[in-house]
Length: 249
Image (tube, rainbow, N blue to C red):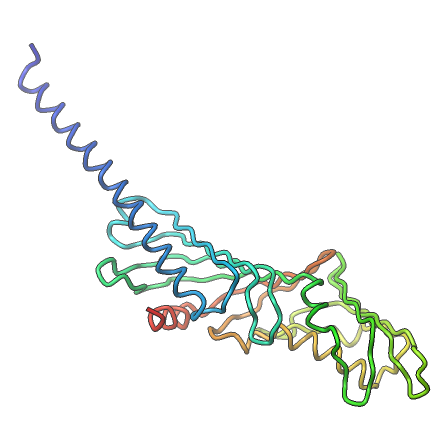
């Protein structure tokens, strides 16, 4: 027959297991609630999207306390204020706290982003665009592996003659909010270097992803391209993101 001490130890162990399992189950419920609350706030806090996915990675006991170590957000077909469709938006949040009673976000410690835009989406954004007084057709934009972008098309003259043009240049971060096609290394054929067509397409591409137009302040750190897409990464103003998430409740 087991001793009293053995029975007590077994009971304590069973109780500890029940608490741990209860905390784990409760933690999962709280994680799912936090994911849903954050997901619901994203269209107003950042931008509308076809779909957002939110994942909370956390220890159960921290979740019960409303404290989350890592929150990742992935958005598909996110609508940029300029009208450009971003293929994907990846956001990583650190040290997030949720008021589990009021179901509101009360703290975001750090926020980082990564935006990917395909040349197909930027190509559609540019389709049919032309400076005043010009007729442009067959516009095509492509990204390459060497951090560069190329725009080709045809400029129709007053004599109705189609003149092919091509502009290629490296893409870089101009400052903390916008990209630019480096004017010092821009290669142009078929149009004048000082012409309106060149200026139009250069500024149109650069303004399409100007981060100053985003509802929450973002700071651009790097820009890279590979065949078919461009990726921008940097940080998000965590305090501003928190304020927008709270106002979206």
